[in-house]
Amino acid sequence: MNYSAPRAKAFTLVELLVVIAIIGVLVSLLLPAVNSARESARRMSCSNNMHNLAIAIHNYHDSMGRFPSAYFDSGVDFQESWGWGALILPYIEQQPLHSQLGVLSGSFYSQLAQGGSRGKQVVSLAQTVLKIYMCPSDSGYNGNGLVHNNRNFTSGLGFAANGYTTTADCLVGVSNYMVTEGHRDIASKTVNTGFAFGDSNIKFSHIIDGTSNTFMIGERETEQCRSGAWVGLKRPSGGNSAGVPYVLGHARVKLNTPDGPAITWNGDAHLGCGEGFSSFHVGGAQFALCDGSVRFINNGINFFWYGAVPTGNGTEADSKDNRNGTYQRLMTRYDRLPIGDF
Image (cartoon, rainbow, N blue to C red):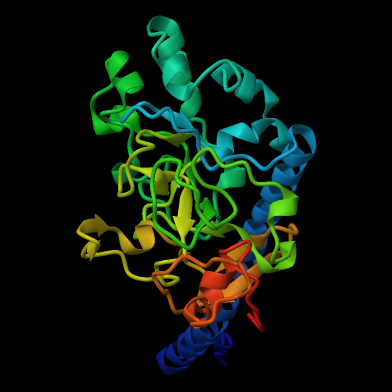
């Protein structure tokens, strides 16, 4: 008798296709959860960055008797200036970088203007990528941790003195974190209503509204809104793309406002979220308050910008200051107006 060997069992084509379809459905169901978990981790890392920066600013205050200025203003257009991010380097475990840059030895411009190997060293140091200034959720612009092309240092007198004239040569380390300038959009060292501005000298005692009711630092993403630079800025007299928004933001622009076309205020072109705050976190952005805590602020936060600068004198019979929204009040340190829930 002839006995044939038993045939091995195998999937039919239909069964194989059914299994593949089931796997595809499971992946499609799990992928959003995985992405959500990853974003939660990135957002927590971003929050930790901001908290650590706030603590560093507190330590700076303990040492210097005041908070760091947003930037120093030499009074000369296109002379590069140190920003708050460079001033606090010793308090984020970057004392060697602080010393090598010569932050306490003169202005950013003066260090660059030495030329030769020293000038090139300062440029190279300014291009250092510091993760504490970078939100992990930010897409970046070119993926290398340097500033958006529109935040370059071309035309800066110190960079030019060293022969750096192209955009690629004039990019510095990026920062997704901006100090809050206050109610107004201003350049130079005009006094503003927020936490820090040009040549500011703010202390804890000046935050009359309370440290838990006043923003210190906010986010700005790179791809759409240009973020900024931790080392400082190239034009302290400028208020637009080339100016003070390298290191700060103000209350006039709604959170996560699309950036463009340019908005004209009082005859000047401004940049929307390129001067304000934004993030790639879904639904809002994170802010560190002056007490060191970090809060997620929803895009729907009460927003109304009124042109009059808050007086904080308590009289306000015409209630003009009261027109300002919660967002604006959080960026003013002394208006004595109620905040409410945020």
